[in-house]
Image 1 (cartoon, rainbow, N blue to C red):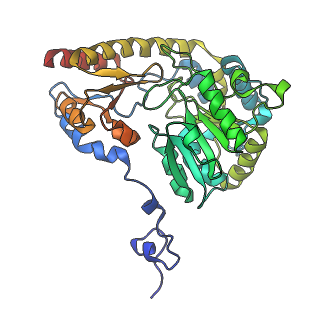
Image 2: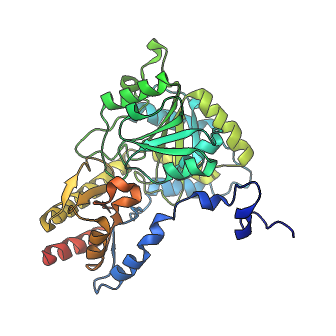
Length: 388
């Protein structure tokens, strides 16, 4: 009998024992939320969706114009992008993050989730290696480890990790889901540990421009990683940034990674073979987005107002908010199982994410995204107030 095609059910029983790639992965978390979404959709006032955290406001006009002006681009773009793009990224990192970095040490990516999921594979990690990530974390850190056959390891402190086995260390500040911001001392300690053990540290900084009650810092800031004078610079470090949240560009898949130029060059070579190319119009839109700070300030004002209204309503309803000093989420609890809270709010037409999507340590929390429209935020506030 002929062997089944890869990906077919029978392929999981091949003599090699490798099986289907999907067998290594957890159930896609958002699929579990569908029954609660149906309940919330049935509410007479309609659905108030605070679950995924997708942007809902218009793409800024300056970015739309840049995209439209470059739609007639019949030729292939490059993986690295034009120098103008890389200079725009390096300039923004210097202006906003204090990073002393040049265009040779940056690389555009097709959305940050793609990079998070495939980075361990592109770095050559596999069985016997460990990928470490915070105990409460974006699920794709674990997925990236499983895709390449490495061992995922959750941690509270880097000091509890086995430096002889960890090959890639994720830090995330501001955090998804908690909104926690790591201070300079905490970031510096992670950098020191990683360098001591020759571990690549990758910092997910996609919410860096969305600090509310604390100021987020990049791992590339010289106060964190050291400057050229001490010979350290960005050695062994990468930072991941996205335009999805700060510029409403989730639909554009515009993001980049920057840091150690040796690692960036390795990723460039691998990604060239894989054809992982940001479309040329999106490259042009990225240049425009990074050059304009005004639209970011306007969007921050919208989110600040939504955050304030929703936080007050949740606290009045009986929730306790922890961390949440940055990002686009409120990390809330009633000190009971998260799915009970999800069900209760679904009955009010409000859909939120259960905390255990982000690890067992979140099983008594919910994550509430304030990325909905002003009208939906106001509707949810009214429902919460009426149900008290």
